[in-house]
Image 1 (tube, rainbow, N blue to C red):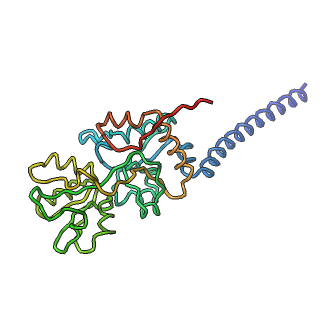
Image 2 (cartoon, rainbow, N blue to C red):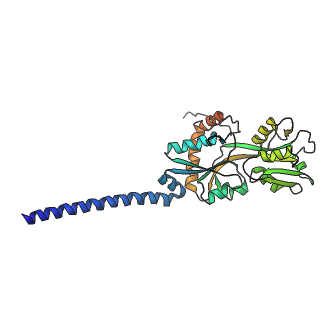
Image 3 (tube, rainbow, N blue to C red):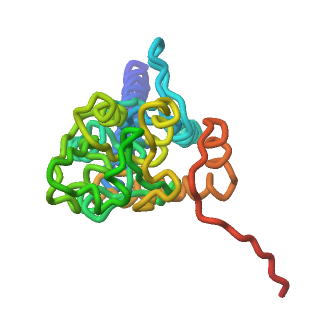
Length: 290
């Protein structure tokens, strides 16, 4: 009887040990699978495994706005990235940056994707991977209302002329590449109005910026300044998001998401909600009969 009881106890103990072993193996397998996803898919795998997406941004109405009282972000770029996260049950951590440092923020892994509305340029394409364009925009310039010297871009690049730009913004890159005689004054941060205000204050003769920002500033200060190239913005350029170089899977995922939203009409829907009126490629739908 004692021997039989001992065998039963031994059998129960062995069964319990086997269950513990199987449970541990199962946990290890799940952890290993999550780790494999992270290792094999780079940043995208880590985002999936952690259900967390780190997003770099700067305030750039109407794409990205910020409630100064609550800190809440809005705008059509914010709506777009929020919907991507919602559909995948991801939590978003927003990290503020600027045009001069968004690439550094990506490289240092402060954030996984930059939704900063960024002009796609050849020099920038060496530093980051750009998504498909979300819209297209050009550049213009702010000059004092009575300014008569500037009739073209070429007329700006003269000795004695001070040009204000926002560091890292497309106007800054244009000035670096094309202006050899004028003095360039750079303002850090993401607020282009600082460069425009320098014109009003007399610290600069002209300020370069994107056409949307210059038009908004000129409308708000119509008695003091004018939007020099309002009728025909120069340097029409695609505007995109960015990820770290080498993050092909994350780039492909974002491109697929943006393309789906585009063809569903949701990108335009979010733009209209934000009051934006950007340029887009015209799509013509045609059904063919077999």
